Length: 148
Image (cartoon, rainbow, N blue to C red; front, side, top):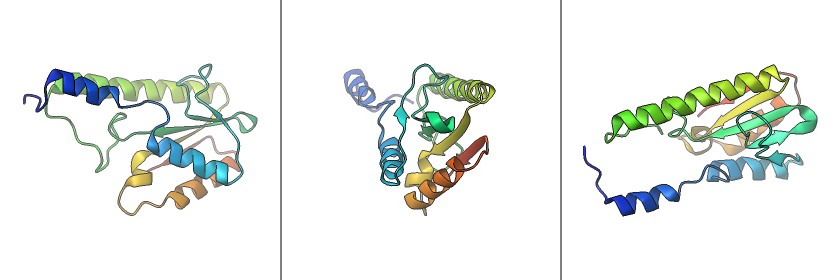
């Protein structure tokens, strides 16, 4: 299927998509800050450059967009154009995510993954997501995944 917009328009649209400070990430960060938690952002020295880092708790949080990380939820739809490109792109993202999480756990970090659909999907409740994250931070569990 051909693209419905010209190359210049598509380029402009894609350049507006950010990898940091996305709306779901900001929602989680602001909620955690309101609850009195302090953290660092995008620590490049850690595998995968986690979105939120709680150094004193040896815990990190990734806030994943359902499309870009290939989540199996209603927010994810495979593109109909350039299918080979998107398959390689999204599968590559998933592989990098897996490697980063494994490396972090090997280095003694605890890892949380919050999916976009947990924040903006049907029936989602940001306060519930934040409650789960705070409860996890106060335990020693190595991993948590918050889905919609």
